[in-house]
Length: 413
Image 1 (cartoon, rainbow, N blue to C red):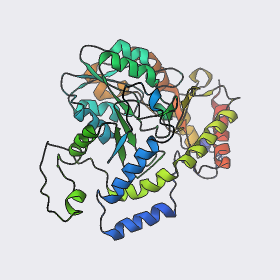
Image 2 (image 1 turned 90 degrees about the horizontal axis):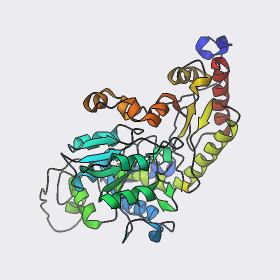
Image 3 (image 1 turned 30 degrees about the vertical axis):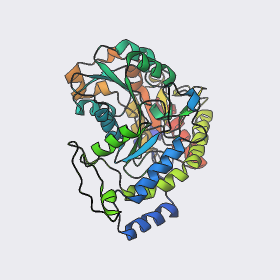
Image 4 (image 1 turned 90 degrees about the vertical axis):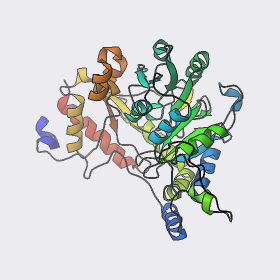
């Protein structure tokens, strides 16, 4: 009965709120932060440089199959610390020379930043629909969207699942396009054994508070060309030829030059102090999220109203989010109402993501319609995200599933 729901006066299924995400920090991060503060150097400096090198080593490990990478002459990736994934995406577009008159193709199922940065450089965003099973951008839709103005593709590895990067890379090579991988969800992900961020011309990673590796705010830009990374470093710090650490670490006075009107996008040592130890724990975090994801799928197998997204056999997912479809034909409420009822049961769900074409700015400027992107439009109305984080206990997961079933019992047709 509906009166059993907490929203209608009943007792919540979970005793305490189970959040969508809970960060995991230990004494390692706390100790490194203390050392950083006591060192007197808190902006970009030695810890940021160390984090960049260790992040590069993580991407370029034994699983970096150079002979499998689509590009000819592949080289190990170089990492540049940024203050966000948004900054990394913007900087990649800048150093790639993309601007007014150019078109950049990306996914409608993404956070708005993936599209905002295209606007920031004066280019035109072009959306391509997504695959039904993974909600990653459809490479066939990319091919149909290419015009003589197309300069780049930003594939978004949604929820930690890699896009079909072999096909995307071939399309890019055929049309001489830049590929900027949006890896905000995908730090541990691999496509046929190749880490994400190592196939495109650039990889852009997020270390936001809810990400698999967090520095509170922060990000990383990767590229395999030293001169391109040098340009990105200049662009990301006011256009200066030397950063503060370079100016002050030696015995020789250095006066910087301004090579371009750059931005304030750099990572700093307080962030890196956290990131270094989060990176060391990343594989353990991944194992936990994988187990949680698989357990969710098992416990929801007999719940036809909730259908998790697929994970294709040739990829390693980062398991960043547990996203599922709510079968609206089987329930008497919409997705948003369902999430509200779930919240009253002390389970915090969310939506990743409202499709970009639904936002007023982009809808009004470009005239995008739901009918233009039928797969994304259908998903945008019914997808929901359930809690998933490394320290989530089996009891918490069981409570989430129990709360979902309780709400479904009340709203089932």
